[in-house]
Amino acid sequence: MQEAEIVIIGAAIVDILVRPASEDVFRTGSYPAEDIRMSSGADALNESTVLSRMGKIVLLETVIGSDPAGQYLLGHCKREGILLPDDCLRDDLTTGINIVLVQTDGKRNFLTNERGSLRRLCLNDIHMPFPESAKIVCFASIFVFPRIRAEELRRIFACAKKQGKIVCADMTKCKNHETVEEMADAFSYIDYLLPNDEEAMLLTGKNSAVEAAEVLLRTGIQNVIVKCGAKGCLVMNHDETYMLPARPDVTCIDTTGAGDSFAAGFIFALSEGRPLRECAEYANECGAKAVSVTGASEWIPHI
Image (cartoon, rainbow, N blue to C red):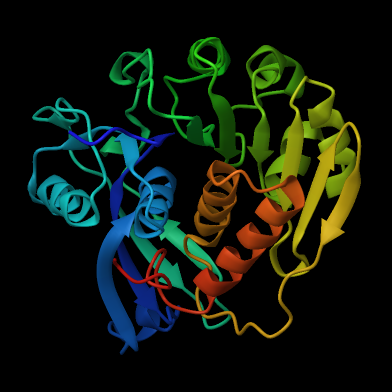
């Protein structure tokens, strides 16, 4: 088996994308969408796919069902060269499937299967210690998994740091009234946190990305990179704060996976030893390319 350079932890599901979605379907009974397609999805798999297409060897720590949807994802990972744990395929799981309704402006709404594998990952599913060959460990989405909360995250991040790994993390909106104080011990192990502005403000209770990043830094995180959509991204650490504008010439078709492509671009540049500003600039570039097409990783060709 190849030796992993990067470990990504998180979800892998199937996305059914519909574009453009219209509420007229509820009035007429049917509606002719321009594009309906099935693709791989979820933050961790999206990041893994982009990084693999960039030439990195990625180990994806996830769980999927042994049903047809799971077999589809297994085939995707084999084609992309994404490494998977031998026991990730589970007979007792139903693979998560999301219906992604994409509006004409690129914004999305999701129909999700609450009983699917999307939210079933737990601490025992994650193989620790991590491979010695991996330099970076990224938890792709804090707050997605009900069974991986603050203490479980702390144990994952502490293991990675003990092994000398660079620890990255992305997040989604907190769902159970989690607080920064509750998450502080886990966050103190993170080298690079990559929330978007809404996620950061919701968790911290602040009204701006700058204020939210300041609060997050006080937990012990080394660098906070806040994704701000069409505005670009905010970079903050204990030495500097700056805003990097997004590309002005991008037509937004579909925002599905844009944040995941941003994170993958950042991690790729980081793995290449690039300075922080260049990592964030490249992440902006990847996010911009992602929104210009339909689907999470279609912007980057399979190598």
